[in-house]
Image 1 (cartoon, rainbow, N blue to C red):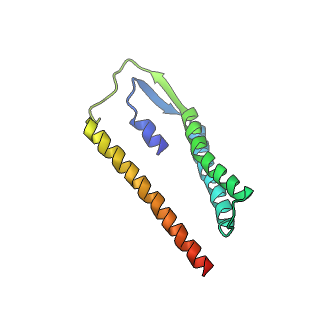
Image 2 (cartoon, rainbow, N blue to C red):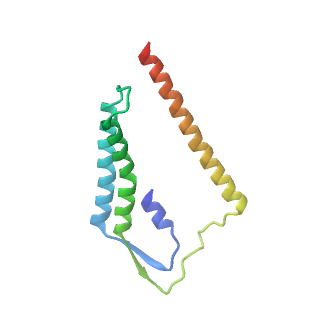
Image 3 (cartoon, rainbow, N blue to C red):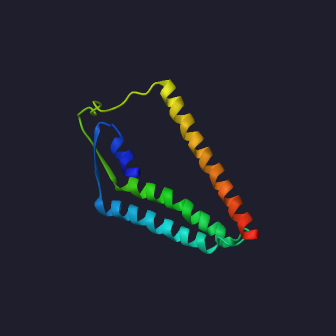
Amino acid sequence: MHYIGMEAMRVPARLSYDLPMVVLSVVLAIVISLVALILTFRMRDERRTSLCKVLSAIVMGCAIPLMHYTGMAAARFSPTDHSPDLSHAVEISHLGIAAISITSLLVLLLAIVTAFRVFRRMVKRSMS
């Protein structure tokens, strides 16, 4: 998603990537997320907050910014005299921006509510 967003930018510059850094950013994202998921599944039966649970959350939280900044380090911008090609760009009105924002927030809220309900259901089953 990071690289798709980078390609969507319209700037008067040529964008190129350093391939080893791109590979490193993808590998870091996968490995750190995998480690965090393994830690999470090992700790899923613990009822209380533990140092390992906190460490797992920190590791997972680090995966996204680490991948992003490594991906940004892979990008090279070379200035050009050409104007950006805006022929395939879409103009969005204020109403469109509001609709996209509200919809995104509602989807996030739905995900949070669903996660809490599933968690409660899992706790009730494990206590029975």
